[in-house]
Length: 106
Image (cartoon, rainbow, N blue to C red):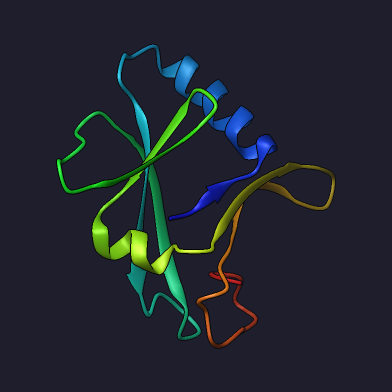
C-alpha cells in the first residue's frame, strides 16, 4: 500500500477538513498503462469504503485502495510540495519499469 510523507498527510488532512464531511478517506486507484507504459493514478475523497479495500492510516488521515490498486501501490510514496518550481502531489512508485518523460509515474 502507498505511504504518505508527513507533508502529504498534512496537506490531505487540510483538504479533508475543508470538505467538512465526516468519514472521508483518501482513495487512491491505479490504472495500468496510463502513459509511457507506467500507471495513471486517481485520488479523491470517498466515504464508501468496501470491506475488501486495503486501508492505512497516517496520523488523522485514512487512505484506502481496492486490492488490485493496493498491490500496484506497494512501496509507492505520495508526497506534496509547494514551491516555485513545482507544486502539488507526486507519487513515486518503484513498481514502474520504464521512466518516460511524460511525468505520469516515476
